[in-house]
Image (tube, one colour):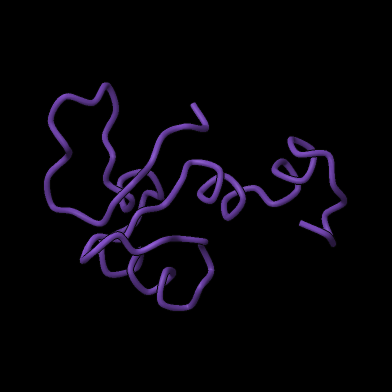
Length: 78
């Protein structure tokens, strides 16, 4: 599951067994997801014009304490 990636898009990518739209994963609108990325609240990478976010970056944003436990660090270091 941590190998999943998400993008800002209106339509899900065909051929995937999950919805890869970031705003759907976060449960917010596309503008809010973009604002979070602009504020660097969620780690991301640009690949050409596309913004790509890993599942681990989403998990780290949604549950910082759970992420720290998952990778074996303290919350302050995460």
